[in-house]
Length: 510
Image 1 (cartoon, rainbow, N blue to C red):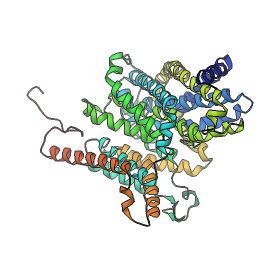
Image 2 (image 1 turned 180 degrees about the vertical axis):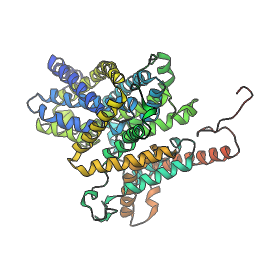
Image 3 (image 1 turned 90 degrees about the vertical axis):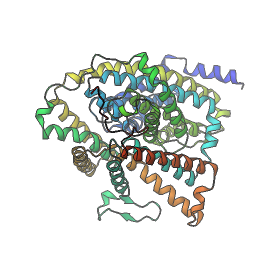
Image 4 (image 1 turned 30 degrees about the vertical axis):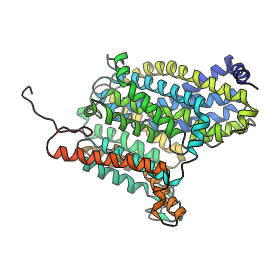
């Protein structure tokens, strides 16, 4: 079957009301599911999977892909409005999205999140269509040494989200790394810091830590000082995202999309590290870097581009190699198999019509994401009419429900409240929470890949320098650390810092 014949056959599969309706409904389900704290896009896809059993293969898979894409964007809505990331992928969006909401620019932040998400989603889909084979083969060259150096470089993000004190940021990251070691050691099978409690053998539940770190401190703050939280919730404001905002952030959006495509094509990385890396790179190269973390619209754009750029790219190893790119695509593999399809190279030969039908559906999904997202943003303006005394208890109920629903375990709810107090104390003493979260996410990946590399080499560290890819990431890490040290020295002399927040300098005009 020629390319044109395959394309026309794919168009025939998706060119009907049923396929488009499934795609639109899927995106809507994903946006709502992502906007519920603790729900996550993964859970939304898993809950939708049984409904695809009686559908045609292309319709069922498009429904799940719509849920996936809608869920990634939907997490940004509560992240911006109530400082509660709906999904782990939207954790980085909190850093500038919520400060914008505090300044009465929630509508502008949500608008930029939508535009950045749709742009990144489209770029990711095009990358899947054009470069699936090449990117998948490149991803296969990543072994534990390459993963280790990549994650080590990613940890340099911490310097960019540490606020005005790199020391406090480092302490926060160390705490995150420490708590990431709780649970069963995957190499030797020994328990670490479990204190004999079987609930800790699986480690601390990530959703519980995430919600506890960001959402619960806001609720505790209201209880601690109710007078400071009188009135309504943060309104969307009168300012909306403009073409000038989009043009200013366009380079960061494209850069974040490319980061998402690159990391998404490597199985096991996920959207959260991509969002933080995109945010860090945008901050490093922006002329307004000092505004990041204080309500910078480019920060929202970079974070959302990073996490949505992963969505299409995770399908690259799935379709080209039959290897799921993340947890969600692992669930989608189930939909393929239920319908008698085996993802991998032979699918491009045996089921080319379905492959091209999926490609067409993915391009259309970006349009649906924009339409459904626009409606969702305006629908969530109703949140602004809810008094905080009503909204925060409702958020607490959703948090408890979301965390409990992950494993049906009350212990996770206790972890959430414990992390809430930790986050509350960190906020009171101006210790940034973002480095903790980054370290908690990347710590297990760093440790596991380092130890696997050592097992491969018999304990020789030379394996960490054994390929051009490892040398590339070592060079990037060295350059970044040198820049951080240089910036710290300049800060000590009172000079302007190119990459880190500087102390305010008084001028004659002040």
